[in-house]
Length: 92
Image (cartoon, rainbow, N blue to C red):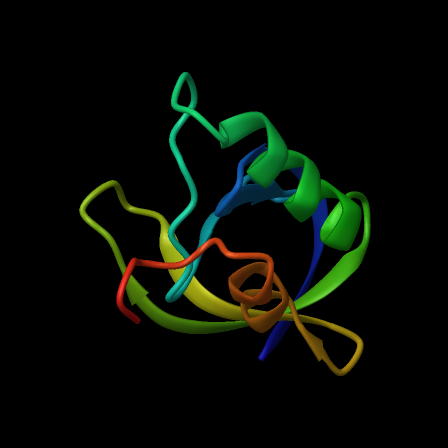
């Protein structure tokens, strides 16, 4: 796991670190900008990680070049917290 400081939350499942690494939460599915629910998803993620030090465990890279990862603040899984708020694929 790599420790990184969050610079900006771009949407409900993606953020940018201080070194400009784009990170997408693995197994989280939040609406895109302009879609219904997108502002709430972004707010939820901001509340969890905005300007905090996070631990990033890279799972893969996506077609946009983003790091896909499991993310933690302290010992709390950000991925699980977002899924618990309902930001997940239907049926999973």
